[in-house]
Length: 321
Image 1 (tube, rainbow, N blue to C red):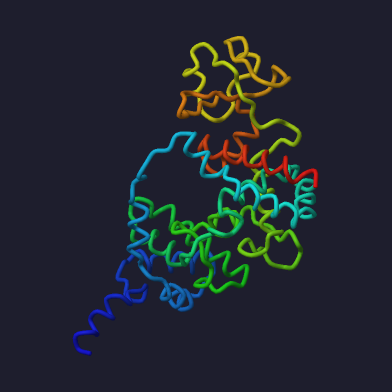
Image 2: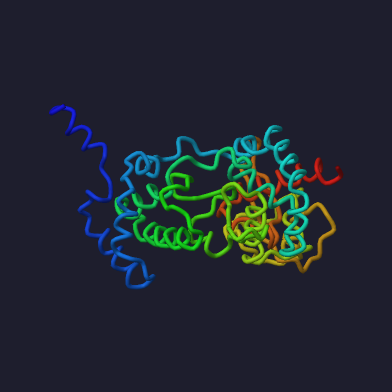
């Protein structure tokens, strides 16, 4: 036992043994600004563990940079599409209500949940408390961001009467079917079924309402299109692509420059030019305002296009049933 004890102590490292002065500074901040009890907060943080594996995953560079052809194959598989259809069917009433309340079509709400967690199958198995504690106090390059998220997490746990050590999520602290960070939970999560709780982990109705509310609060414009494929690129295409994902041009301007877009869309539509690199070369799309709104969930044109195309495919199969 005298040889085993040091090993056990090494692996039982927790906030109670953490001499990091940031922890006590954080506790005093929470007492002063949020009305927490210092001793209770020390007890809660005492359950948290510094997780080297979380730091390693944050530091691990992407093994491979995917192009659109490769990225698309991940999310447009038949299994994900079929599970999306099943999710739509069992939640048809909640999705219809979300469209009525927030103006967001069901297909994009379903697709977000499908892309983020495969309808709850890959929602994360890490302790949210461990993740946020580790990244707040032991990951200096993002400490400010994750300290703020830890603060929000403790507030939401108090509001929702949750044991902070219980919820699971991603190694970065994202939670539930829609993978909300704590700040997003406080800002956008809703009790959509009226049971007195905002449960985005297991309550599909709450998750649906919360994702729809997220879109609505980020400016979703009901009735407007999302994106449209272009049959040819405009002259000086890179100039328009480099302007970014937020629409900066009128569709008419891009048409005059040579963009040919499938569909009868008004020249007055606010538009960005989206370029996707495929196995066969560049592919161009007109990105309208609602495409930009999808990118507020993840600031990637490939992510937004995956959501769009997954949602359209699910809609084709589910809407008519």
